[in-house]
Image (cartoon, rainbow, N blue to C red; front, side, top):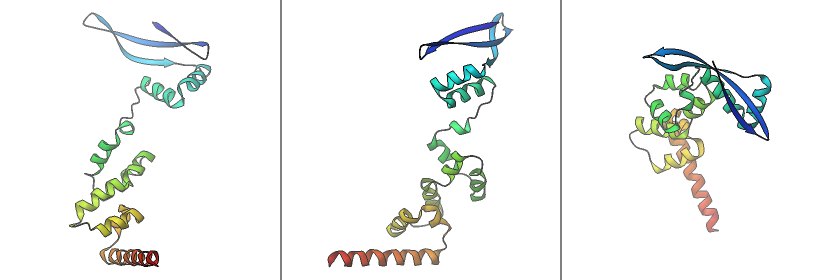
Length: 164
Protein backbone atom coordinates (compact mmCIF):
# COMPACT_ATOMS: atom_id res chain seq x y z
CA UNK A 1 0.00 0.00 0.00
CA UNK A 2 1.43 3.39 -0.94
CA UNK A 3 0.53 6.61 0.73
CA UNK A 4 1.28 9.75 -1.28
CA UNK A 5 2.15 13.05 0.36
CA UNK A 6 2.71 16.19 -1.61
CA UNK A 7 4.90 19.02 -0.48
CA UNK A 8 5.63 22.16 -2.37
CA UNK A 9 8.49 24.55 -2.09
CA UNK A 10 10.17 26.90 -4.54
CA UNK A 11 7.18 26.43 -6.85
CA UNK A 12 7.84 22.70 -7.30
CA UNK A 13 5.87 19.70 -6.19
CA UNK A 14 7.50 16.62 -4.80
CA UNK A 15 5.96 13.24 -4.35
CA UNK A 16 7.17 11.09 -1.52
CA UNK A 17 6.25 7.49 -1.46
CA UNK A 18 5.88 6.06 1.98
CA UNK A 19 5.46 2.34 2.13
CA UNK A 20 3.54 1.17 5.18
CA UNK A 21 3.83 -2.43 6.15
CA UNK A 22 0.46 -3.13 7.72
CA UNK A 23 -0.42 -5.58 10.41
CA UNK A 24 -3.68 -6.51 11.99
CA UNK A 25 -3.81 -5.80 15.70
CA UNK A 26 -7.17 -6.24 17.37
CA UNK A 27 -8.87 -6.01 13.96
CA UNK A 28 -7.27 -2.62 13.26
CA UNK A 29 -4.79 -1.79 10.55
CA UNK A 30 -1.77 -0.30 12.29
CA UNK A 31 1.47 0.76 10.61
CA UNK A 32 4.35 -1.02 12.27
CA UNK A 33 7.30 -0.10 10.12
CA UNK A 34 7.83 2.81 7.79
CA UNK A 35 10.40 2.85 5.05
CA UNK A 36 10.90 6.03 3.13
CA UNK A 37 11.76 5.50 -0.50
CA UNK A 38 13.45 8.57 -1.88
CA UNK A 39 15.38 9.00 -5.08
CA UNK A 40 18.59 11.04 -5.21
CA UNK A 41 16.69 13.75 -7.12
CA UNK A 42 14.10 13.99 -4.35
CA UNK A 43 16.82 13.96 -1.72
CA UNK A 44 18.44 17.00 -3.33
CA UNK A 45 15.14 18.90 -3.20
CA UNK A 46 14.46 17.91 0.40
CA UNK A 47 18.02 18.86 1.36
CA UNK A 48 17.68 22.26 -0.29
CA UNK A 49 14.31 23.03 1.28
CA UNK A 50 14.68 21.55 4.75
CA UNK A 51 18.43 21.10 5.03
CA UNK A 52 20.60 18.01 4.93
CA UNK A 53 20.39 17.47 8.69
CA UNK A 54 16.59 17.15 8.50
CA UNK A 55 16.87 14.78 5.54
CA UNK A 56 19.43 12.64 7.35
CA UNK A 57 17.35 12.65 10.54
CA UNK A 58 14.13 11.62 8.77
CA UNK A 59 15.85 8.87 6.79
CA UNK A 60 17.40 7.51 9.98
CA UNK A 61 14.03 7.60 11.75
CA UNK A 62 12.42 5.67 8.93
CA UNK A 63 15.16 3.05 9.18
CA UNK A 64 14.65 2.80 12.97
CA UNK A 65 18.07 4.27 13.66
CA UNK A 66 17.55 6.57 16.62
CA UNK A 67 20.39 8.45 18.28
CA UNK A 68 18.86 9.56 21.53
CA UNK A 69 22.16 10.42 23.21
CA UNK A 70 23.09 12.94 20.54
CA UNK A 71 19.77 14.75 21.05
CA UNK A 72 19.87 14.80 24.85
CA UNK A 73 19.66 18.33 26.34
CA UNK A 74 23.00 19.74 27.52
CA UNK A 75 21.90 20.16 31.14
CA UNK A 76 20.82 16.54 31.41
CA UNK A 77 24.00 15.38 29.67
CA UNK A 78 26.12 17.33 32.18
CA UNK A 79 24.14 15.83 35.05
CA UNK A 80 24.76 12.29 33.76
CA UNK A 81 28.46 12.91 33.08
CA UNK A 82 28.93 14.29 36.59
CA UNK A 83 28.30 10.79 37.99
CA UNK A 84 31.03 9.16 35.86
CA UNK A 85 34.51 8.33 37.09
CA UNK A 86 37.36 10.36 35.61
CA UNK A 87 38.52 7.48 33.38
CA UNK A 88 34.98 7.03 32.08
CA UNK A 89 34.70 10.74 31.31
CA UNK A 90 37.90 10.48 29.25
CA UNK A 91 36.53 7.48 27.32
CA UNK A 92 33.08 9.05 26.86
CA UNK A 93 34.65 12.19 25.42
CA UNK A 94 36.10 10.11 22.58
CA UNK A 95 32.71 8.89 21.30
CA UNK A 96 31.51 12.05 19.52
CA UNK A 97 32.28 15.73 19.08
CA UNK A 98 29.27 16.72 21.16
CA UNK A 99 30.39 14.51 24.04
CA UNK A 100 33.98 15.74 23.72
CA UNK A 101 32.76 19.32 24.07
CA UNK A 102 30.58 18.41 27.04
CA UNK A 103 33.32 16.41 28.78
CA UNK A 104 35.81 19.26 28.40
CA UNK A 105 33.44 22.07 29.38
CA UNK A 106 34.37 24.42 32.20
CA UNK A 107 30.92 23.96 33.72
CA UNK A 108 31.51 20.22 34.20
CA UNK A 109 35.05 20.64 35.52
CA UNK A 110 34.00 23.39 37.93
CA UNK A 111 31.48 20.92 39.36
CA UNK A 112 34.16 18.20 39.57
CA UNK A 113 36.64 20.54 41.27
CA UNK A 114 34.02 21.62 43.80
CA UNK A 115 33.24 17.96 44.50
CA UNK A 116 36.87 16.98 45.13
CA UNK A 117 38.23 20.17 46.77
CA UNK A 118 37.37 21.32 50.26
CA UNK A 119 37.50 25.02 49.50
CA UNK A 120 37.63 27.09 46.35
CA UNK A 121 39.17 30.47 46.91
CA UNK A 122 38.38 33.57 44.86
CA UNK A 123 41.96 33.38 43.57
CA UNK A 124 41.33 29.86 42.29
CA UNK A 125 38.18 31.07 40.54
CA UNK A 126 40.09 33.93 38.92
CA UNK A 127 42.84 31.55 37.79
CA UNK A 128 40.22 29.14 36.42
CA UNK A 129 38.90 31.94 34.19
CA UNK A 130 42.36 32.14 32.65
CA UNK A 131 43.38 28.48 32.40
CA UNK A 132 40.10 26.56 32.80
CA UNK A 133 38.70 24.37 35.55
CA UNK A 134 40.05 21.18 34.00
CA UNK A 135 43.58 22.57 34.24
CA UNK A 136 42.92 23.56 37.86
CA UNK A 137 41.75 20.03 38.66
CA UNK A 138 44.78 18.29 37.16
CA UNK A 139 47.33 20.72 38.56
CA UNK A 140 48.89 19.49 41.80
CA UNK A 141 48.65 21.68 44.89
CA UNK A 142 52.22 23.01 44.75
CA UNK A 143 51.91 23.98 41.10
CA UNK A 144 48.51 25.53 41.78
CA UNK A 145 49.89 27.63 44.65
CA UNK A 146 52.74 28.75 42.38
CA UNK A 147 50.31 29.76 39.62
CA UNK A 148 48.09 31.63 42.09
CA UNK A 149 51.15 33.45 43.47
CA UNK A 150 52.26 34.45 39.92
CA UNK A 151 48.77 35.64 39.09
CA UNK A 152 48.60 37.68 42.32
CA UNK A 153 51.94 39.32 41.43
CA UNK A 154 50.67 40.21 37.95
CA UNK A 155 47.53 41.77 39.43
CA UNK A 156 49.61 43.76 41.95
CA UNK A 157 52.02 44.92 39.22
CA UNK A 158 49.10 46.00 37.06
CA UNK A 159 47.54 47.87 40.00
CA UNK A 160 50.89 49.62 40.67
CA UNK A 161 51.17 50.49 36.97
CA UNK A 162 47.67 52.00 36.95
CA UNK A 163 48.42 54.22 39.97
CA UNK A 164 51.43 55.77 38.25
